[in-house]
Length: 379
Image (cartoon, rainbow, N blue to C red; front, side, top):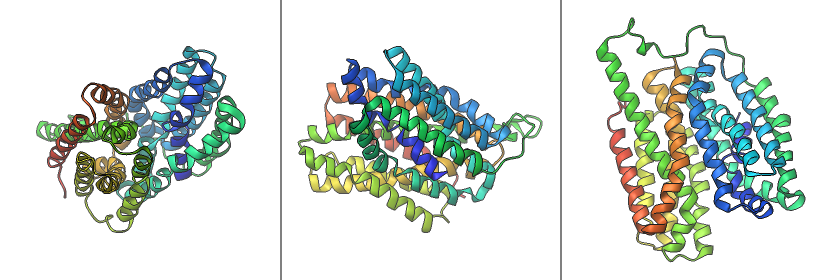
């Protein structure tokens, strides 16, 4: 599943970073219109994620993840054949549905359904492999584009989903027993719980959704605009690139620490530490000191790496296995919308006010997320 996640992230979320420029140049489209395909795909994914979660609760993850491989293949094939923006955005519509059904949220839901409370180790291992998506995917896709062009690259990537991703999902993931209920958590059933219990559940769920959505705004904005922010702070381009490269290794190192040392910590504790590290990292960029910026991005990357795991383990620890897929789908919707909207809003702030005000806004969002985390139980 980790290999399938690496493939899925490389060919969806990280794809425009490599192919947007050659597509825009070849088709005569603006780079904004081209990159906006990803934003549209994320909005589609957000709309579909609750439905995907319910299907995983009812039928298990195998058919849902296998469908995602087929949809990713169809979307990439359609992108390679696109002759106008309409077809290009239709391709991203297929890819958006596939992202809802095939990225971390769906994979976490599958693992949670299969392994219950012991799924944390599997989720950590999954993110360890998935974390190499940009590190391995970008150079491989860039090499493909240089050799055969962006259209045939899309066709080759579509074939990869059918040859690698689909068999993994069909033959490696165990079949789950069909669940006859609607897939919703029993705590919402008024016949089995008190009004006070339901109110407590709703409060916890809202806090968790707020925490994760705010962090999605921060992470998506920093991911897209980091290099521009560093350049506007007066840091040389080559140095800015080296600073940005700190994020990936730091994410992997933090996930290894979570795997080996942090597995006995409650996910709420891990989430608090992750948000704190991320916020401190962003704040340390404000002085615009290159040596400090390396430390800043190491801390930010570590926090982001741990929080990716907490995104799957927190709902499981707080609410249990029943209805886990449905909850993950409901949580994913605002997060995916935030990932679509965040970079656009950040671009406006960056253009109108500059890099320092943007970093201050990101710190405020991280602080709000940290405050929300203190409302979650840690036992």
